Image 1 (cartoon, rainbow, N blue to C red):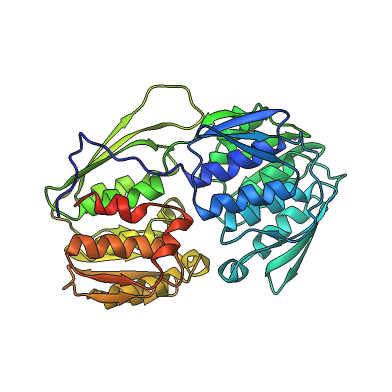
Image 2 (tube, rainbow, N blue to C red; image 1 turned 90 degrees about the horizontal axis):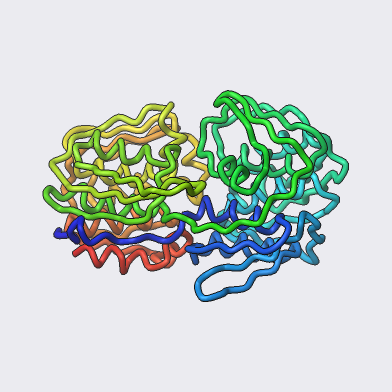
Length: 419
């Protein structure tokens, strides 16, 4: 496979993790926010639709999304709020509602209805909110507590969504909310709080927010999604001598562990940080492919790589040796059971894969072959195996290629441009 020169960089859609949070803060802010490079993926549309149901107003102005905030005065939705396929929408929105005098039902598609929501019920319950679950999953009804006081919350699992749900709840609680426990996850919420003038202080071991707080309106350009860029970078990494670069991509340190993994595989990775004082660092990533050797992903690395693990497995099919992932049981409760989805697809294209309750091992290099791949509606499975098929020069037929639009509309066009 040949790729674009690293001197002719690609761009990728805006980071959806950042976009969800920026939209929620803009909806809660006093005045108008202006957001640029808001991704058009289905997950972010779900957040926008949900916030509109709560009273925020949106308008497009020549590529800039203008959000008229509510100042925190949300309205009760007239119908259940449809969160689509987006777990981030559902969990963070539950946090927003937990400390407001609103009763709302949150629902989603069949995949989202299978994802665990009990993990937010206990920490949000610390504010006096009541989350009525059915079998631990959506749909559920949030009975918010408009008289909530700040509280102490221990985060029991390494989940940025759980942490962020509590932080959003803290905005409308009276007094200080203190978080402890497993806080070393992506920190987009904390960064955006500070950009909006919300006091969010911490030392790495604890976080504290003083409420009630109304965010300032944002004027912000969302950086490119490094998790989307990962698929294009991987396409070069597995082809010795191939090069690709992605420009204006987010370089938040909590999101760049995948670049270190590419280096461990043996690929050449160059990062140039752009100047500026934006809330989120950004810049250019260039990758040059090489002969790869297997890597081991340990449990303590999983939280920083959770979105890229299926892709790492695909890269492992090109590497010499056994690439293994452990401590990743969370993969079983994502958009699909990503351990089983990955293993079935990898075996279909000719890789030897072992699975365990919390991970997998890929024995490389694979003897690739044409195959039909079942995505189970999972965008990251679809994109990972599209990359694998293209790089191995075999025909991979995805049963649901459209699911890539959840996070990366235009992905297949971008991938095709690398040839």
